[in-house]
Amino acid sequence: MIPGTRAGWLSLSGQIDESKGHVERFGLSEILSFLCFFVAVRRNADRMRSFTLLLVVLVPVTSVVAQTAAKAPPLDLRDLQGRQIRLSNYKGKVVLLNFWATWCVPCRAEIPELIKLQNKHAKRGLQVIGITYPPQTRNEVRKFVRRLRVNYPIALGGKKTKALFTTSEVLPVTVVIGRDGKVEHVIEGILYPDEFEQQVEPLLKERQ
Image (cartoon, rainbow, N blue to C red):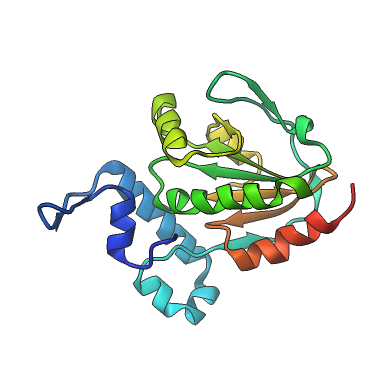
């Protein structure tokens, strides 16, 4: 569930001490997370005019960057166990490359929904692949993935990996790749259900 209040956001990042009844000070990770959010707001001013309430409660917004379908660049990454992850291994599937970080509050809010999407649409050819974004350690990522029981591959990425698809500073970012291996959409911010229906569902209906 995506939090609709400031308290909801802070509880995700573990900054509320229930026993003491007060909010602890922000760390670097939370500051970076809010910076990601405000960059997203700045890039989505038109949409925010219609959703002023969302701004008040600090729900991150999303934008879909127009794309001229082009072949996705080859990726050769490693997962948490050191196994190779290549885009070419998922030929014929609709792939969602989700760039995220353990310190990114919107990313952590989005991942449970991505887990549900993978469960629901795997038989139709959907494949979610998470790609980490620094700074974070392998151990931090491993603990987070285990705690949430992530059911899709997690690759260890970097700034150069994300730059292959977008120069945006926003997190999360989801790159939608069609069955033909072409980049169809780059979605900045959380992938909302209506966007999944509009941007991903038509690709799942296409035959291989």
